[in-house]
Length: 123
Image (cartoon, rainbow, N blue to C red; front, side, top):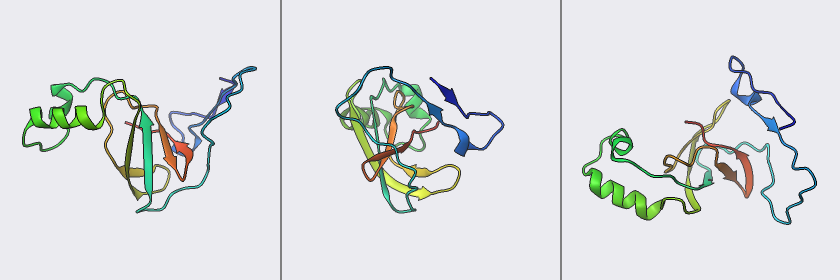
């Protein structure tokens, strides 16, 4: 890392890091964007889900059947498999909130809007 602007007491909008990749040059990459989506717009989170435990699942709101919910999560966001979750933006500001499915292991993933990275999920 070259530098960062993170300050635990500062505003979230200053949470950014500048990285240097040396001489490595990738032929394909996700561009960064400063465009902020509007409420109702769709965003994607791309990442590698980790293992989802019964304990974690039990903290995720009112579920009728944890076993059924675990099976659904395993189908939609399989462990250690590159996955994409799409949902709608609910609000914008210093923090963008959205409604989509993520699970442990996806923290640090890219939030994609209009094909460009605009941030990463915060938990």
